[in-house]
Amino acid sequence: MTLYLFRLECLRMLRDPRYLALAVVAPIGFYLLFASLFGGAPAQPGELRDTVEIMVAMAAYGAIWGALSATGPRLAHERASGWLDQLRAMPVTARQLLTAKIAAGLTVALPALVLVCGTAVVAKDVRLEAWQWAVLMLAMWLGTLPFALLGVMVGMLVGPEAAFPLSYGLYMAASALGGLWVPPAHLSAPLLDVARTLPTYRLADLGWRIAAGHPPAVADVAVLAAWSAGLAALTVLVQGRRQGRLRRTRAGIAAAAPVG
Amino acid sequence: METAIALDRATKRFGGITAVDGLSLEIGRGSTVALLGANGAGKSTTVGMLMGLLQPDAGRVTVAGRPPRQAVAEGRIAAMLQDSGLMPGVTAAELVGLARRMYPAPLPTAEALELAGLRELAGRRVERMSGGQAQRLKFALVAVAGAQTMLLDEPTRALDVQGRREFWAAMRNCAAAGRTILFATHYLDEVEENADRVVVLARGRVAADGDPARIREAGGRAVVRFRRPADEALPALPGEVADERGWTTVRTCAPDDVVRRLAASDVAWSDLRVSPPSLDESFLALTTTASPLAEEARVR
Image (cartoon, rainbow over all chains, first blue to last red; front, side, top):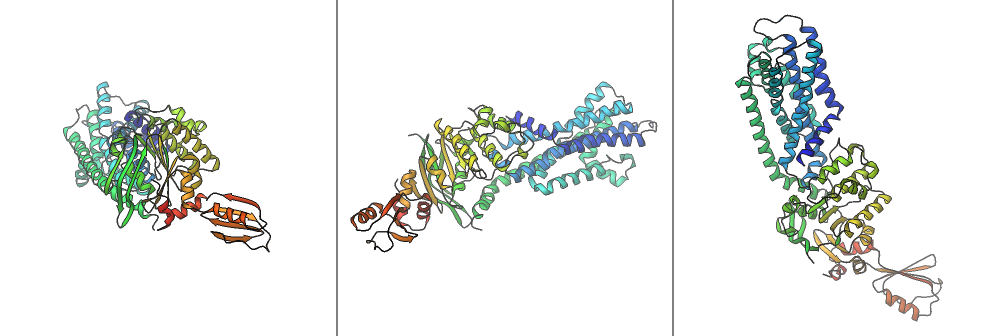
């Protein structure tokens, strides 16, 4: 059942033109644009080629939106539409539901990773070792977990009208501050300090280091894991409080409605 | 008879409002029961408690002898809720397929869609469905469960006449398969043809409980109509007499007496007809405060 729900969650994302535009087409388009504008210079010793650096940044950029949009705005909408109420009357647990949702968030993050890298190989002649590709994909893919969890958080806390703009705003801000738009080498020192705390920067940095031939950095993994753990704990906390309150408020609304 | 649903002095309050007030009700396996009541009578709260979505403040609620949440988790009970929504972005068949996978003894997806009258719309996306189609899809989600007990909270809301007819035909199929069905409604005409027992709720309490014909008679007044020449005086008749366009209408609790007295009189009456109480009128009578008829109607 959870598997089938997961499948449906993925299917409805793939059928959503907004997802395809923002999480697949946009990062590929931006990659081609930026790689053509800034990708000419030969790499400095010890630095990545610009075409590779931008590839990793845009792959992260697309994957993040995939994970975030599959969870946040969807969940907020389902809460408001009554789909979650319908599910509460069915033999399915909140855990199964969230598992399917988060798994779907990770899955729909994958096309951006694969297609941006594929575009880099085909259009910009990017070449990495086979192990680098494998580790890069796997590490960056798992690295989108905090964003799926952030989406769950957003979806649980705000209404359907606010969820999309809030998700998108967080996404844009964290992408810009995290050095996905401007290479981190060009960020000022205070901004770089901010960037280092953000999962956006850490996800990209994870990729940059692997692309440079290094193993995944412990700091990157640690920051991403910390964000994931924090958001997961917060989710459990909110969910627990909500379940206690739900019984009272929601029913209260239902009972008060006919009276006025 | 084995008990499918039992409420024992169940009470649910929301702030200062007592939505369900010491409700006791037992429903045997395999019966089809209508929960009739005006808006705010406590129907949806009762359904919510039976699904374990609401916790009673007092009393006990069991489904198949278990706590409701357990019965839901075991797939013994399925409900069509009033304010529930559907998952957009998937087709009707996909959504019914999802529900199917949650239950231990489900119907085939195609059969549930057929029952709900959605065979032609199996491939339609949920968000492109009309209100009536979405309502049928919600029924398909319940039908596919193959659960022993089905709760339907105002199931025909948003359905047109044809849709309602098809819906009840489908529901009678489920009833014939031996399922226990409890449906909440405020459409009186739906009750008589589709339920073998009616529980009338008013202000969270049972106002009347019995088979539909009995409720009809207990609550309302029969109507005796006949023609008579305007210049002839009537004998004293028990009930409320009205004259209009040559027709006399008597609303009465004792139609037999009216007919007897009329027959014994010299009035040249003609075209006599006696109709049983209308359910609407019974319902109003039963749910009005302190109605003596309501007391009389407590047949169980």
